[in-house]
Amino acid sequence: MMVTVTAASISNPSATGSTTLTIIGITVSIAPASATVDSEGTVPLTATVNNDPNNGGVTWSLQNTRLVCPRGGFGCHNVTFACTVGCGSFSPVSTSSGAPTTYTAPAKPPVGTVAAIATSVTSTGAKGLASIALRAISVSVLPTSASVGCELHAITYSYGEPRRGERRGRGRRSVDRNAKWGSTARQDAALSCPRIR
Image (cartoon, rainbow, N blue to C red; front, top):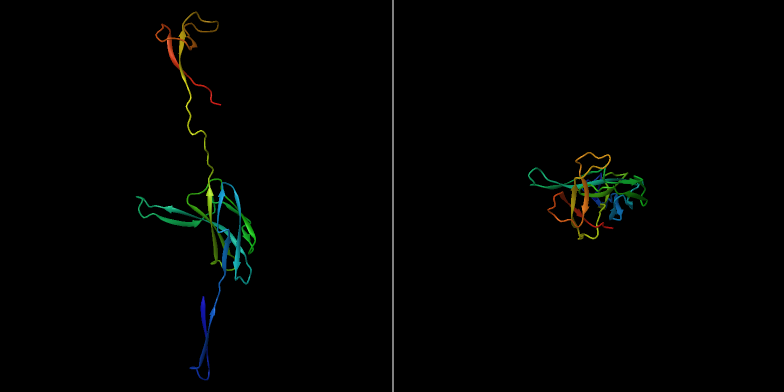
């Protein structure tokens, strides 16, 4: 910001002199400016505060930006808000200029994007931002497809004399791999597949 200071003579107000001053405000930057973190992973972040006469350091927070669409799907727009739950955490939550904090990612990333915010303690209007890409847990299965040979066998129910402890009329179930269809006993089908190791 630039400011012009003017001095005028008391005896002759038309006699003036001026100078221009450049006022440099507090600025905050974060390193690294972007990071990719796995589920429940960690990354160190460091904020540097410039032009702070009080050396007040920063406080750390998180924000979430997501696409919001009204009913009907027209007029979609991004909304950014402070995220206190589900976006991760910092330890410690306050640091001096040049001192690192550790960001820990959540187990399940939220919808949208996440950013780390470092806010100057001396001037809360001075902030630094670092974007954080969160990688969710993924599962893959190999091979992606497989073919196995299965056989169709006949199940024969025979009705003979009951064994000790059996009720009369209860059928005995047996798998006959060589049985042919059309016998007098009741038959069903059984599918036999090899065990996949």
